[in-house]
Length: 353
Length: 252
Image (tube, rainbow over all chains, first blue to last red; front, side, top):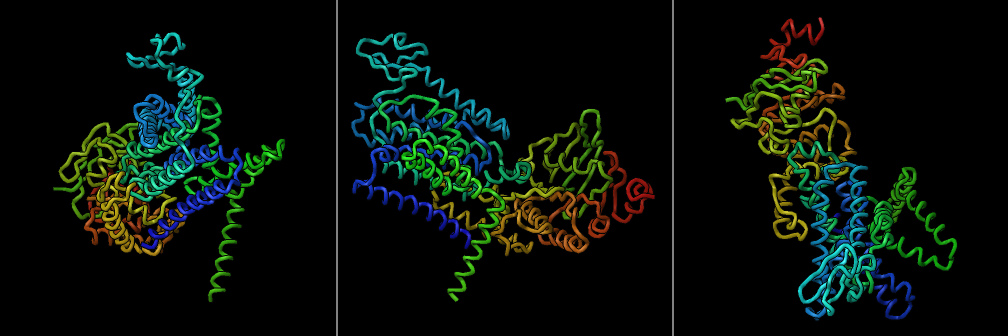
């Protein structure tokens, strides 16, 4: 029973940190202390945090290396943006429309998660990483090649160009291949982002400390033993993977509704993005959700805060990465941290006594 | 009727006949030993019984149910649980959680109920905690409930593996070299534990072991395996004095 309360306490601290950071940010915004550059970064920041937490479910809890997380985000981004664009007039209530859009992003990404997951989860380690990497790239390139239009007869689809859609004169082109989706309503904001972060955190934390989470972790720790005590390997791997994909889809919806023009570039939905999210996860600590949140925030803000140093910006970024990696993972440093913590605790108890 | 009845079990790996015409009959409540020199096929038989390998021929009947060629998880649900020669714990999970994973199929709530913390989550989790702590107390592991399994000393890891196997509520418990790597004192304690498990849980146990002191000390019946075939079968004393067994296994 004591342990339960410890876990709950730990989770509550994480939630409180997110809320505190939100309140501080809101105050700074209201008093006008935030540069417009930083303001523009707030929603992407929320997106990255959600992505990092959701990827941590695959990497830290399921124990499989996925390099295609941006692919699921891409699916969520485009499906939700498409929905919002087509129903702009039909559903005038922006909040309701965005809510449905998020749910659609979630479901679309989850479906992709199942489709990709069934074959991919039979693989292990490097092989799984390579296939998920390929998935991410395929999705990005596929989206770049799609043309979709709408007129009174319904949807028109092509993989060639806008003209071959054969639209009626008053028809509207929704997806313009590499030019992407233009005119998505600007429904995202910082508050919604933070709410979605909290929901993601609660879902992941609750999952980890439940029957399902234990089954998933047992597969991570020892597949053969898990099977021998009656755990259905495929089922639980797929649950974790799909849930992770679904949450990446939500992050995609948040991301796409912050941009007037949504295009699938290597920068936002490609390999680089997947790796960046993985860096957040590894740096924050594999399996440590709070760490993922902090790492995502620090590493997103850092390059912007260092903008004044212009040329040295990326150099400092790299150094911070290395230092944080050593601080978090080097065995010698971990020992030192443990000793330091023990010393502090001792001092505290002495003071109390 | 016997609890476990295996008839004519056999498997080949390529040209190697690993197990041939293996028969065994274990009565309920028996403590049964499976011995033999290295490479005789003992662990292969465990893997056949638990569905890790599919037998080429033969049948396995557990408590009247044919479980031949079924999947590992189905066999576990049918009532066979095992431990491993090289300990396979869930190392990065707490001792308590290791046992709670074992309770997985007996205390059920859905993933959704878990995520949204619906009332059934609290009810079932409470049951699980109580049941798991009860098992840990039996093995004197209750004080280490919050420790990571990887941080337990060797002897306790062995115990935890048995506790986890028992959590799945089996009819038959398979122990693969439980005394491997233990010193004489730990082996003594293990013998006590195994006997206790049999009496306390009314369990039927089949164990593989090299430690003759343990085998002759607690097993009621023995099967000796050599080159994948049964060499001798019967009461422990008779088997250990059988001239062929002494030649093949214990040395002349």
